[in-house]
Figure 1 (tube, rainbow, N blue to C red):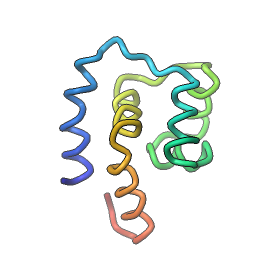
Figure 2: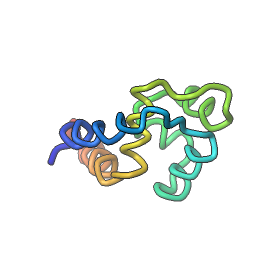
Figure 3: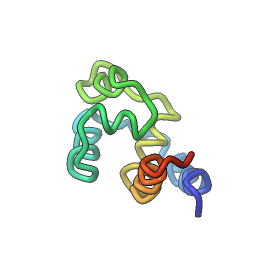
Figure 4: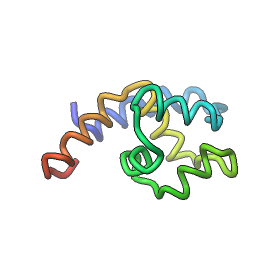
Length: 94
């Protein structure tokens, strides 16, 4: 399964829980516990700016719907992001 098809597959589950709002603590836990990455590294993995990601973690603003989808996949299906990270390290496009 490709990264893209994985995201599409699991977005259906995300939209079933439309009321989900990611709290700063949840976002920080995903980054630190599941991935063990810095804010800069995790922002890069998600494809968002460091400033945006930092704002989510401190609660200054909340992720928009597409970003919430990315966080859902990052939390429940980290293999897709780890696969993408491995491809980037190898010089391939995800």
